[in-house]
Image 1 (tube, one colour):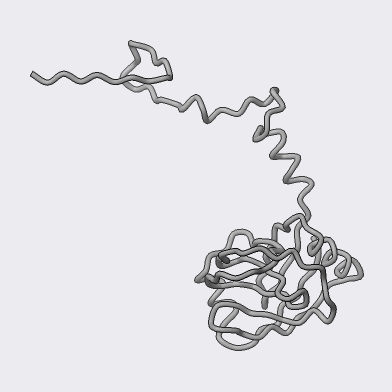
Image 2 (tube, helix red, strand yellow; image 1 turned 90 degrees about the vertical axis):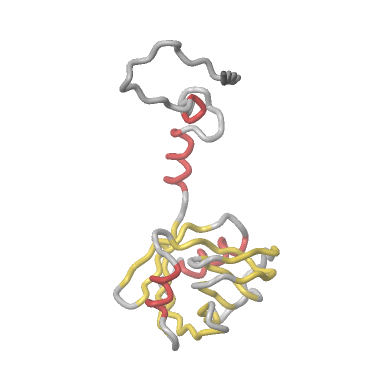
Length: 166
């Protein structure tokens, strides 16, 4: 004879229709509680999030920007209009271009992923299409793109990228 016992902190009805589905009660947001993570707060955060636009050839991408003094300085630089950058390849993992000015640094030890936009040494804007680990300043993250797509778009040689604020 086999006997099984289980304990749970979530109460479930003893009798359920055969076709019912379970929903994790912890997955519901309390929309009126004002607690962090509510749907209303997330919507407001998305509305207040400034984005940068990247044009690589005929492809346009949105970049969700970080909140730091480096990003603030970059936004000021882009307030007068877009920047067209001639980006060169480095180590088969990134493309970088000199901004022509020095921005404040907010360096942290980090592990980059494809799509990360980084400020290197306060003056070089870098797009990662592979991984790296270094002391860098995070500027933002390209939305809706994977490593393979970035690798194909950026190619093996130099590439021209236009950067602007959305």
